[in-house]
Length: 142
Image (cartoon, rainbow, N blue to C red; front, side, top):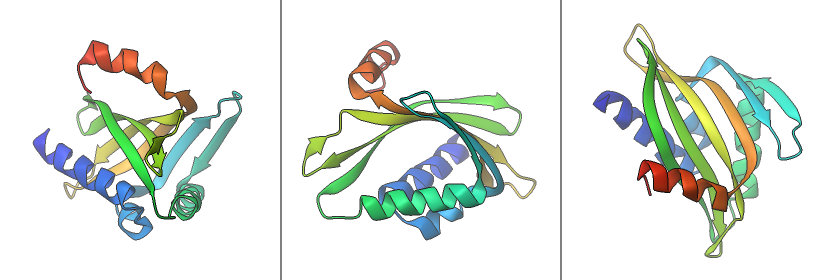
């Protein structure tokens, strides 16, 4: 799992830097995702829509004083060459933590060349940050 953790750390670093060019290298072109909004609307999308969404988010949050807050909640193997990472993503703007964030259930697959890629995501959007604290206290991952 250490090789995967290094990969995941790089993925999260690219995300924190809002580097779309770096992030593209971590995402499979066959990527598929489902997002459920806080109003329970469901959106399914693929690679191109994902890249456009990342670009919009990065552009929206690129002003000074806005930073990504990414918490690695859990990482576990799910298949021989697949890992699941649960990530809680929120933002801080001018030092103020947002009240909500998104929970990403990201599946990464190791290819035949030995490189990891993000292949699937299930995203719960608009999750109150206070609801995440109970998960952290149970898991001990603050």
